[in-house]
Length: 253
Image 1: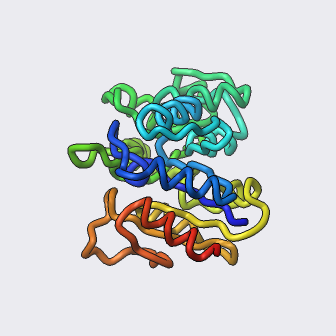
Image 2 (image 1 turned 90 degrees about the horizontal axis):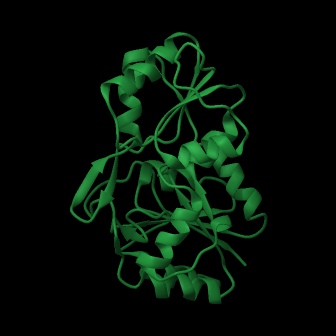
Image 3 (image 1 turned 135 degrees about the horizontal axis):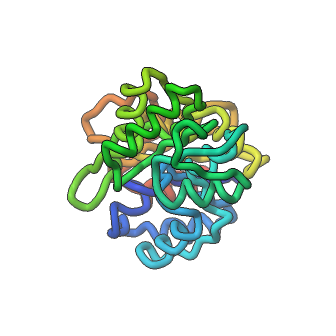
């Protein structure tokens, strides 16, 4: 049986509003025997927070083990500490869980991890850039310039990282979609069968789905407009998650 990997923002929900029919679509895939993973480039929240949001907003009960975040991927790339973070709780917990010491001192940092930072300030950008200029390795959780909410789009981690990279004169290494390391991580979790990727961004979600076992479905409930030309061509373009689920279930018969 295949595995299904769902992006979250713009696919399963927008902000605190569920995509209509998302709960039934996820349960139908699960009941048909498909392995479900939720893969998000949003680094702000730990997996258990994401699982709780799926339960409260969508009505689908996921385990924390089903949730993969770009913060987890970034933490797995760290090779030296102390670590200076420009981001939120999701990164902090992921880095601490790996046993790395955190620091606010740019001169002490061996690694800088930058992600979505909704408390962004000039001082936080300056500290991260100073650390990188002094030789710290720069890891960026993900390159999404925006993320969707009910009212439209908000600046994403890519926008936060751009400030640090511009100030430091260094382009960081990317941890989240569509990095090869994250693709390999998903393939380890789904070792056999087809891997379906359902996402709303061609440059991250659809770009991740490359390889023999991967197939991709682009939905139009997030950032991609119906008349746009995707930067990476998906196997199918559908209206929403319920339509994507029906396609997968039909092809699995």
